[in-house]
Image (cartoon, rainbow, N blue to C red; front, side, top):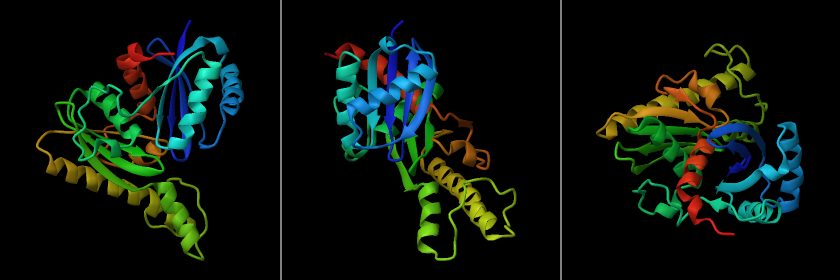
Length: 261
């Protein structure tokens, strides 16, 4: 049975998902390496497929979302050489079904559009998507399904690394919930600032967005660190770490007829 391979290339991690029909059968997270070759992708994916009990020949289609442009070349060569044809790439010319009301639509990251399409498809209403990646982003969609814009801040991991790099006596810490806001040692104090501080920032920005728009907006969180922060944020109503892969499947369904080999 044929499968779709969806690939979301982020600045830090790349997430891959295998869809059989409309069901996400398996997913993996690997480190993003912009210069990775098509053959390296083939070796890595073959091992992942074997772990998931998939056969190589089941992959017959692909779609790529990337915020790292150099990574697309190796991925596209991988699909052409090992999967029998090119993959769709999220970008100008791809039908999203979502008008982009940004001043320059080409500036919007592919992952932000994919997330917004998936969230609007799920809610069928105004929504806010908070994506905890290398950067933390807030993306806003109105009830008509139009992308309005959003907010970008440094991600929680970047902030943690900045403390370690620029404060001589502060250590590198694990991103974990410390249990109390008032830390009794340096590590728990840093963890409290990162986790509870980011949760507070999420709530403050979501509340400001809701006050600025003229429609109710549901809030969904995604990204690798979503589960850590979402439980401490009052405004997040749903967490879906696989939202981007689901959005890629939707976009493939809307565009696969245009794919040529």
